[in-house]
Image (cartoon, rainbow, N blue to C red; front, side, top):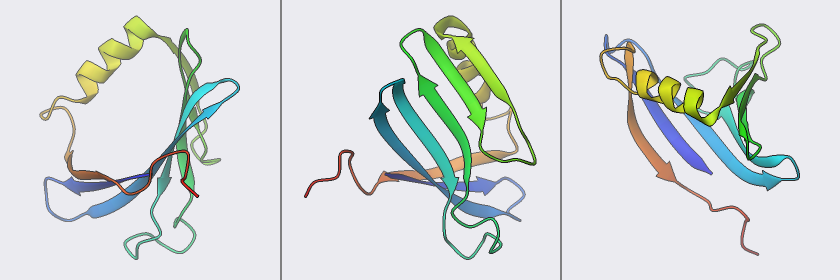
Length: 109
């Protein structure tokens, strides 16, 4: 599992997410969920928000939030272009402050 700390440029908001990556029959799956930290409301804590599946032909990006439902299929070229745009610091009102790996998959016994 990876922990990601996000901070908005206006310093009003900071919060954490967790990312779990695992191999499934349909391909490599990465699940983004809100952490269980106190910056989230009780109903938001620990909820999955987005799943990305790499099926070997491209990426399927799906919302796990029933209030904001979407499913987007991208070939690798389109995913690359989207990633380039999304990682530009002047594009987003926030920045990733820290990412750290806390557990490796599969979990060791």
